[in-house]
Image 1 (cartoon, rainbow, N blue to C red):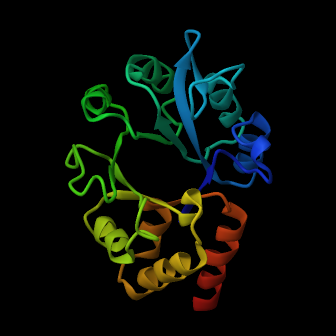
Image 2 (image 1 turned 180 degrees about the horizontal axis):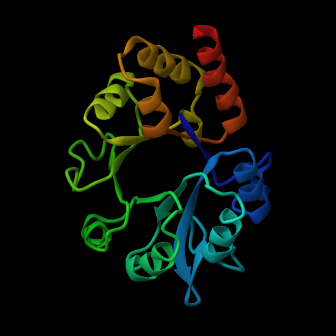
Length: 222
């Protein structure tokens, strides 16, 4: 399983979306999830409309290059119309593993046509994921339910999709039981370990804890 450190590796919220948080995540081999929008003519890291200086997306890409072959960058798109600038930046770094997600549906089609790696999403509010056939993967999230159904994770992997799962703590819900249920479902499936390692991602505020939890399971099976 690939771990995506939500807004970097941090201990207190003031450390989120800082270059130091992303450096710490990359140094441990974790991927990251970050929010990208445009401000002042540049692509910046910011969940909300920025009211002050923001870290540039270019700075994160430059940092990422210091950690070859490089963990995954999950790019949460927070504004329409970014396709051409992102394509230009990402096509210059063909070895950078990334995917874009959360675009509006009309905007997502531009990402597909530009040859960018785009994920669709599934939640209570997207029961029928848009552009599913063209999507490289699927972002599984739950806003009302306590967690993503383990059977949904296994099903999407069987269909050949890359899968990124949102851990419940991102919505201020307990995560421990969800992790246990997901682990048991993966263990009970006949999915190859290599497929899970390469195609399944977990976006979490607690990547260190997740690393210990899921690796402990693997050690116990050996």
